[in-house]
Image (cartoon, rainbow, N blue to C red; front, side, top):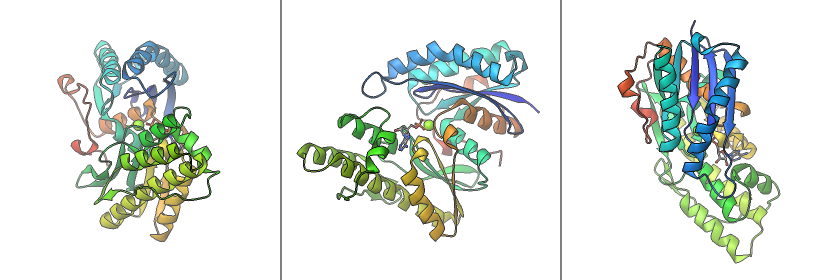
Length: 328
Ligand code: AMP
Ligand code: MG
C-alpha cells in the first residue's frame, strides 16, 4: 500500500489531500481565494496559491500524521486551468517529488472530480455530468477513455451563474446566491434554450437574463428561477441522450454546481424515468480539492502509470479524453 499526496491548484483553490492506494482518505486541507469584488483575477488567484501552499501542505501532513518522507508519490492537477495557478502547483510539487526521489504524476483536473465521485458513491460505470465554474462536460468511459459526449461551446454553467449574480449585484460565487433567490421565484420567464446536437451554449441565456433584469419588469427571484430551470433542463437533456446512447444506467454529478438541490432533483426525475440511478459526489468533495487529485494519482500509480518529468508540464487546455484510462 502506498501513500499519495495530491495537489489541486487550477483556479481559486489550493487543495492538498493525502490518500492511500486502497482509497482511504487521510487528509484534506484547502484554502480558497475569494475575490474582494467581481470575479476571479488570475494574478491574485496565483498569488493566493503561492502564499498558501506551504500552510495547506503543513495542515495536510498534520491531518494524516505523516511526514513528507513517508509519501510514496506526488500527484498534481496538470490542467485545464489558469496558467499562473497551475504553474505554482506544478512547480512546487515537482520540487517535492525530486527532493524526495518519488514519482510525480500529472492528473487531468476533471478526472480527479470523476474518480473521487466514483470512490465516494457506489457508481461503477456512470455517465458523468461535470458541472463547475470552469468546466461543463458530459462524459462517459468508452473505448478506454473518458470521452466527452457533449460540452459547452462557450462559458461553463457555473460561470454563467457567477456572472449573472455579479451583474445583478449578488456575491461571488453566484451559484448558491442564485439558488437562494430561485427558491422564492414562481413564474417561469422564457429564456433562450440552446442545445446544439450534444453541445450547449450558455451565453445567450446569460445575456438575455441580464437584459430582462435591466428592463425592471421582472423580479430577480423569477429571473433566477427561470435561469436555473432553463440551464439545468439543457444539461439534463444532453445527459439523458448520452445515457441512451451508451446504454448506461448510472449518472454521476461532479463539480461545484452539484451542490444545487434543484438540479439534483431534476436529475433524479430523469434517472427514475430511465430506470437509472443518480449519484452525487458528497458536498464536501463537490468543489475543487486536493484529495480528488491524490486519489486519481493513486489509481494511476497502482495501474503502473509512469510519467517522465519532462512530460509533466502544465496544460491549460488538458482534456479528459486525452488520457488512456488504464485503471478501471
Ligand atoms: P468548482 O469550479 O467545481 O470549484 O465549483 C465552483 C462553481 O460551483 C461556482 O461557479 C459556483 O457558483 C458553483 N456553485 C457552488 N454552489 C452552487 C449551488 N448551490 N448552486 C449552483 N452552483 C453552485
Ligand atoms: Mg473543478
